[in-house]
Length: 469
Ligand SMILES: *Cc1c(COP(=O)(O)O)cnc(C)c1O
Image (cartoon, rainbow, N blue to C red; front, side):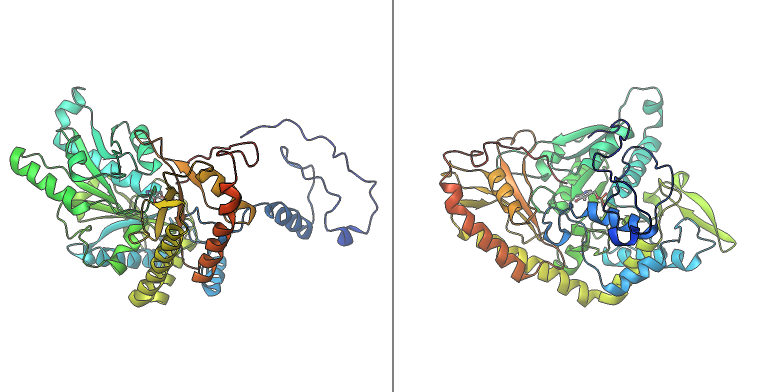
């Protein structure tokens, strides 16, 4: 990525200016300045047109099966978001009703996640799960420091955080930014996420917590949160070591409460200290809103909480940002109100049904092997079958792109870098009909791919794609 590309030259196609015809040309003759602020203004209509035209090159969000982030909302809430674009989330005193919606959302989530006392829920909105994970990680680190003040201050102990190599990049960021040792349990054979045994092997007296992911971004699988907690309970029984668990429910935090109510992964497990989710993933809100919740006030050290004025009173806040849009929080509350429990259940079940059907369809084509089946997150990953030698998943991804489908292929992390997969994320708005069209396109491609002499030879190049989180 070029951050700085030098000066704008006069555009080679610059035509002589004729006045009075701008309205007819819609900016056709404009060379858009790319690296310098233009000397003067442009009419709003032309500016709008020029920018819209450039955006034609972006992919179609509805065909983007790479992202977890919401790409469809009710037109009514889209209008509401437009009306609230000027609201700053931090101005709790000036926009008390927006602050009230945030409070209600926190309580609703605390109830969905079985906090011991949802009316006393401790939590906040954020710009997304990444910020929420930073806050949760900070709370874990601070609690560990309180317990280990002396050895931390005299430099004889370095805090660490235990998690699987499949964690989302925000956890590596957290460790880097907050100077915590990042202890990643590697993938092993066909185990693509953290389990109790691999977590326990890395825990010691300087572990600030274990992160369990409900919904691995690599393959959509749920990590066994209860087994991890049980193993840590047993460890405490043996050694007295009390290691809290944070659940990264960026996606699964809004799936499991509706589709897997009996799965034990949330505050029903006493060891779970905090949970995050992305409102803009299966919370079904446009980007960017996330949520961080703690099981009780004890799990969030008071010294990290700041107070802002709120209706003449005091409102605790915990956030990295100060100013931040309020519209997304309002949109989250809209969704809770509009969908209710039955609505969320229906939407998530439809996504899971489509994911399972599409995964089965792809398995049925022959040359592919499923890693997951779309029955946890509505997400699955597949690779080519062992006997396929003429093409690989990168070929499949590239050929599907020719039809407009955005499905990423990527390699797995350390220990399984030999494995390359395609991941498909099914979201609200991806119908069975679209899934059938994707399956048909894939089926049509197979004979051509099988006719290739070897992977990457169709276009004579083999671009390698990075991992899409
Ligand atoms: C998406 C994701 C994140 C990061 O969330 P953002 O809302 O994009 O900041 C963190 N963890 C997991 C498991 C995710 O899927």
